[in-house]
Image (cartoon, rainbow, N blue to C red; front, side, top):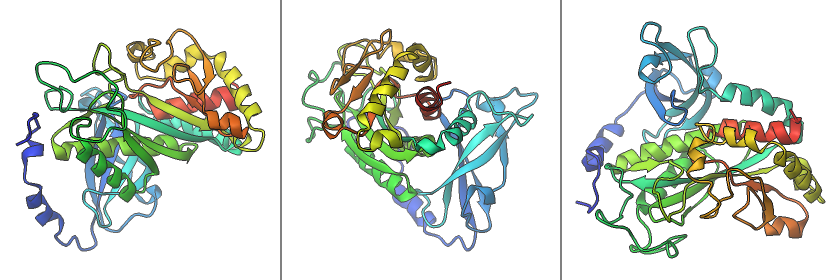
Length: 366
C-alpha cells in the first residue's frame, strides 16, 4: 500500500474491470454526457446508450438530469436539460465510446446561471475575423483523499520551494503516474494538450491546452479538466483546482491565458499587442471579476504580489516579468510579433468567461 491515503476507488483491482471493458458491445455506443454543475467549478457525468456512433453533437439527443441534486434547480421543478456541444473519444471505455460535453438549460430553455458558454459563443462569432487564439496553462494540486497534499509529511512540511519546479526524482515530485495517465487520456480523446510540467509547490502540476481558436478553448479545457478528475479517481487521489491550496510561503495555482489575434501574430504584431494591453489596462476590475467563479474572492488569496503574482488591486505589464498582470515573453519582443500572457485568471476560472472578456475588451471594445 502507498504511504499516503487513497480512496476506496484507488484500492480496487483495475484488472477486474478490464475484463468487462473488453467484452463486445456490438453496435451500441456508450456516450458519457458531462457538464458543469451549479458551483461553476465541479463537473458531473452520466451515460446514455445510443445505437450508432455519433459523428457530431447534432446527432445526439438532448437529455436531462435532476438539477436539484447539482445546485441548478429546485426539487419542485428539477429537470435541467443537456445540450451536446462537443464530442471526444472516451479513453476510459475506449472503442467507439464518447465523452459528450454539454451546455445546461433550465426548464424554460434559458441557460443555467453557470452556463457561460452560451454568451461566449456569441462573442467568438462576432470576433471570428480577428481569429483569436488561446492557450491556457492549467495548474492544479494533487491531494490525498483527506485533502492533504500528495506526498507531504502528515505532521509537517516538505523543504522550501526551489527544487520542485520541473523536478525529477522521488524526493522532488509526487504523483507523476497521474500526470502521465492524464496526458495520454487527453491525447486519446483528441484534446489539443500541448505539454505538462511539475510546478513550484510540491504535489502541484500544470498542463497546457492550446492553441485553440475561439470557443474551442473553453470546450477543450473543460473536457481536459473532466479527464483530470476522472483519471485521478482511478488512482484514488484528488485533483484540486483551488487557487491557494496551502496558506503560507507556497505558490498558488493559476490558469495563465496566452492570447493573440491574427494581427498580433503577423510581422510587426508587437504594435497590436501593445494596443491590446492598453485596452486591458482600462478594464482591470471587470477582468478580475471574470477570472474566478467568486468574482475575485478566490483570487484575493492568490494575487498578493508575491509568489510570482501581481497584486489583485493593480494592473501591470512587463517583458518576461512573472510578477505582472500581463507578461510579454522576451522572444515576442525579439520577433516583433506573437502573443501576450494574462497571468491573472485563477486555476478554478471558467475558461468561457476568461476568453469572452478578453475578446470583448481587445477586439469588440464593449
